[in-house]
Length: 184
Image (cartoon, rainbow, N blue to C red):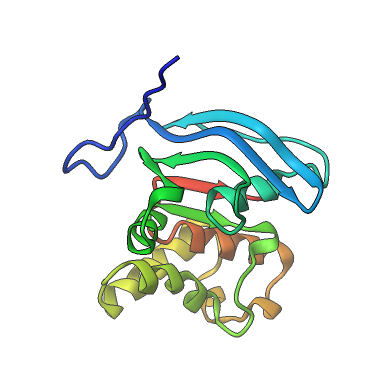
């Protein structure tokens, strides 16, 4: 059986509703002799919301970390926007990473940076936006997640747990990503 994975349209950066944007085929993840996922297959299409539900320690976070490249798969393919992640050069992988946002458990904010600086990290890393525009976007993202404006100038330790999660979500939304991974 032959499988076709959607290729991005030439000049078309945003995926179209229903277009396959993520395909996992035969994924195997393990740490030592402990197998977490074995022969896992699924796909996600643009506009689709997919939830992975399971008990604590069943591999939900490992799956996200493997898809985004923080863990190495032992076998299988991870294809994002028609591109096999294992076959990409570091520069091409970095460009592709700008198309997703990640909210890690408990926000995973940099403790030495303010909320605004945390939100600005992906903007600095993956765009050439001028500082004035970055500041405007930070204000929008802070408001978008329901944080008060003064939260932007606070450090994570000065926020409640819920506010840290919202700040992490604002950072995940910083680049208006095509895919949003929420590890909560």
